[in-house]
Length: 141
Image (cartoon, rainbow, N blue to C red; front, side, top):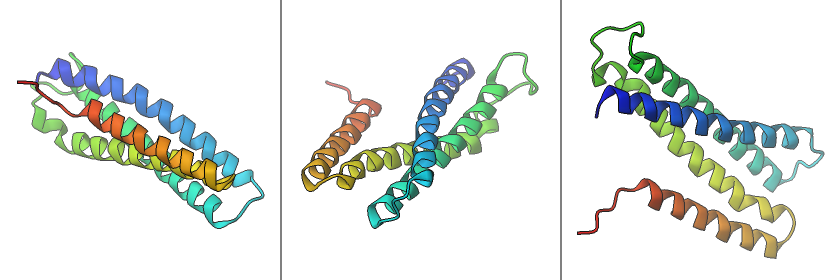
């Protein structure tokens, strides 16, 4: 893959991760000021915190890739090996953030009722499956 491709990909992931991190941080803030301290609320808080942290790490890892791969940047004669570590960390954290966010969706309904919990769990699982399907490269031959 070319450096231009990595630069474009990193910039897209920065945008997506920043947006999803903001949502996760807003949920964390709401849960912290909430008076609830039951088991499900604590799980929601932990899951939202993991999601926010993972997406933030992804933002900064992808920012490093963007800085390295920008033409005329601070590194000359860049190879894909120059950003291997931020690429691995960024993608792992991005995927963990997606798993945590879909877990958060799945758990959210359980704060209201059993029916709402089942509904939110089904929606969370479908969401995760559709995300994984769209991120997977299938070739119809």
